[in-house]
Amino acid sequence: MYPGRFQYEAPKTIAEAIAILTEAGPDAKLLAGGQSLIPMMKLRFAGPTVLVDINSIEGLDHLDLAADGSTRVGALVRHADLERSSGLGAHNPVMAAAAPLVADPSVRNRGTFVGSLCHADPQGDWAAVMVALGGSLIAQGPDGRRTIPVDDLVTGPFQTVLAHNELGVEAVAPAPKGTPMGGYLKLERRVGDFATASVAVSVDMQGGTVARAGIGLAAVASRTLNATEAADALVGGPLTPDRIQAAADAAAGIAEPKSDHRGSAEYKRHIVHTFVTRLLNRVASSMEKVA
Image (cartoon, rainbow, N blue to C red; front, top):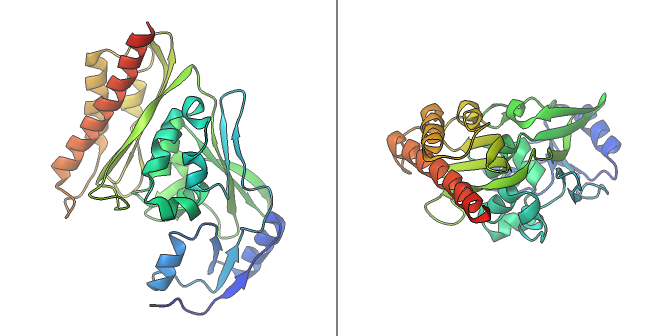
């Protein structure tokens, strides 16, 4: 199928983009990578009257690995930019682990990090990562910029708190409270398929003690889940087998998967438990080697 008719706009500035969105109303859509929007338009699941292409706006393609340990990702940074970043692994190991697992190479070359967050797919990789990291989205609209914690961004499947005339201009992962560790694991039937279940774990270590932890779950509910109870239970002590087991139990306990062709709900909870355990054991093993 082909998309319906639409007006195409290519603003040169953020202010111009906001003005177009404001005038066009809720039926306008932003285009960055287009790897989610264009297929939806071709299937007539989305039918914007105005398509606002932001690829001509300068200054949105930055990937800043700041000296304080924070990570700032501009709206036009592609998945592949993160995958190919030579410094990301040491700076933000959770992002680095997720980057090569996003969809497939063709999607990673065009799709954007911020666009993925704003798309609010319950199976999206980056939302789980940013929830685990305690990250935020910087949105800009007619009244200026505001910071939205990623955990508060999504209101439901493919729905966010963003107004129709706001655009996500940057995503920010805060500086770690110690040595950043962790990773991302995803189960998919084949490369590029939607996830059966995926888990992001972020752990900031100070010596042998967990200073901060975050656990994000995707594809096991109608939105990305923040396993706060599981993560908070890790803080203030070492990664012992008992504490890892308790965290995995708590994370699996909040999952709300549905049985489908990818597996039963029980199986998906088991995957969450297994992935949390595996990721935390990797961190614990790394700490033992350092000691």
